[in-house]
Length: 134
Image 1 (cartoon, rainbow, N blue to C red):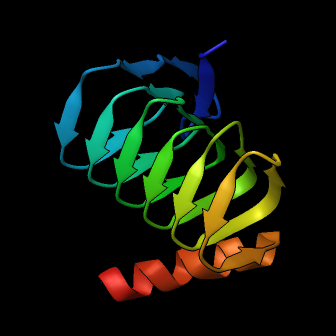
Image 2 (tube, rainbow, N blue to C red):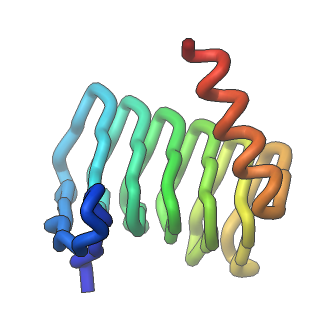
């Protein structure tokens, strides 16, 4: 369920292990994950993932989230940028802007911020972020 494959320069699939940040864990700092990642604790920093990002119902993220796919049930204070599907589930609370190719919001989730959708929007914002960081 949590294994994802990444491509190397030789176009070979490599299975990247899943990462789990459990309930009661508090991390201060940025996280970069090559494989799937699930956070059920607290993260005070930015999260970047190349596969699926899962934010559990009791989790709290204070920072930006960037990834391929994301399922969010907890609370996020920051910008979310997803290249594919962003799914806001359950009692998710999002306070920040969203940039996603596709967005699914369940009726029990709440979102406060601006939303930009479409594959071109996500790619443009990724390019703009690179220019700003250089």
